[in-house]
Length: 255
Image (cartoon, rainbow, N blue to C red; front, side, top):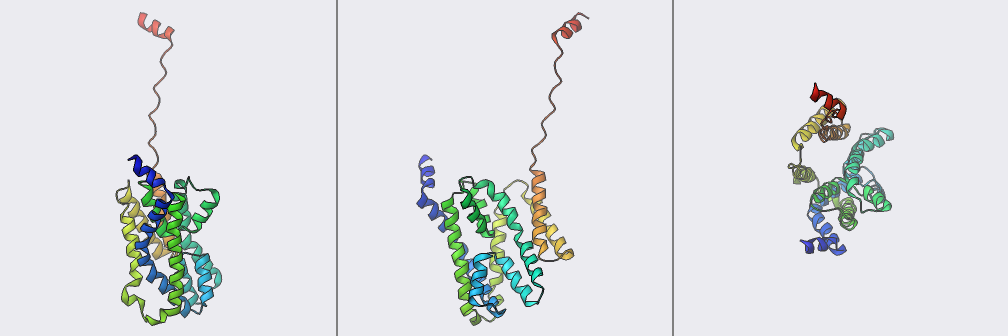
């Protein structure tokens, strides 16, 4: 037991764990990111603009939404608002994961939150159940994921026209299926089922009333509020009434 703990503290082992955990995920990221690069070229973005957007925004869902809105010729402020709405879930991620980054310096936390995407959050939440999140693990995982996203964007932009319809290959379902598997991995946690059901129901309600992309944020907020309400510690029992003073006890016994 002691030997495993010491091994877990080694820098090289932390890096190896991060790379090992992220490599299977890159198989899902590769086509997803490649399709984005191909679509961005079709929308008229240059290779430099695609690379710069991915380096600075680095959020697959909001980047896809940005492309869709650009194709609809909507005002720029609407695009910015949509990207903000979708990325607001990262605030929730940071609030949850921030408590588990005690070993990070302030500048490491800033960089960590910039690199915090859905996949990174899910993997770190899963790992935190059994061991602490250390910077070497986090940034090894993030470096592979970030470089895979950027590299696949470029490849997709250069060669994406060779694939006429990516949906025919099921590429659009790869990441949603992965996220579903990650979510179900938390089924053993307390109150998982009611939180998930409330979040899904709220997201669907928001989708058919407020519309996309706000359903993502509102569904997450509903689940977060329920989780916070269910996690409140039980109220302590009221303290027993103070015992009567000795004089009163004596008077009572003689009465």
